[in-house]
Length: 424
Ligand code: AMP
Ligand code: MG
Image (tube, rainbow, N blue to C red; front, side):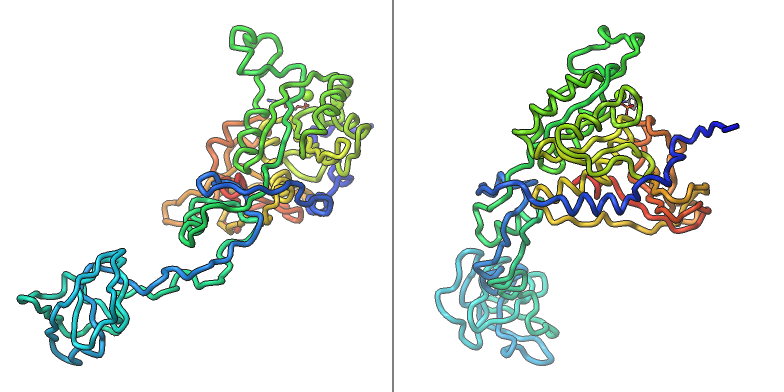
């Protein structure tokens, strides 16, 4: 007599390992977006489409790091104070129109260009003025308080590589070399659907309409997935909720394909009679894999609708977000022209014990906490069900347990991936 096993993940042996699935996905995926020129203020969050090479050095001239008095180090007494006449005043943006002579000092302000012939600055706070002379105490080092030309950027350096998503830092760096416009990739055009007869839209079906008693639940995934896509700079088309109906799903996917680079659905990718997505996608294009040996998110699909890439996320809201971060993120980065980087995995001692089934990859919602000995530990959220969306809010990242792992003992090092690193 056969027995029931209430582990819905029992058939893992027949499923594709995570890394094999990712190899298939990576091999099929390349940059699909064109390029455009945008002004620097519009470039935040965009993906750079060419290397940026510096046409000049930064800073462009030696300059003072402080308010003070510029001198030639050679004029300073080796052990004793030095008195020099102050012959000029150099404010930032007002360089001296001659070279400095030996034996003179200049008053200079932060950012002021060092005159040729001077190499050292005494800080305002350290000197004494006596009439038109400055008295500089002993001990100033050669080059003190001077910033060198090119100490940040050398002319011809590649300062930002093609494929970088531009953050505030990169925007600032581009401005520092005088770049007003940059060549970036056009945004990836992504169509997003939810599926399920039970799904109601919080925007249009208010509490009164749903009432919680009609077997309906509110759509989470269209909102959370669109929010995630925004972090990757995508242009999103919200195509609403599809009923569990083959003809409706087929028509909607078929119509969405031409104007989009990627279609993302959630729900309807399991094996049930009401799960139509995989079959419909296969009939309109292809399914490259379906079901990975992972938890959460085992039923998920990757393929094509006609020529448009397709990702079918699981319906459970936690699983949908986790699979977005661990599978779809890679696809979206590659299609958007971004250089794909691995999410940094911090090795942190576990603050818990658990057993795990060998052969599948698991992600646990977790947070880093400091224990009473001052040691950082990773703690998993107590409820790990794929429908426990509060776990995503209470946690700061995922612990990734690879296929070989059969359990975790308190104190074992585990890989912690922060949500921040997986959502941009
Ligand atoms: P499915 O994969 O369609 O069987 O869905 C799995 C579970 O996720 C079911 O309990 C669904 O009601 C739920 N679900 C599916 N889509 C959504 C959605 N867009 N928002 C919230 N829950 C969903
Ligand atoms: Mg469903």
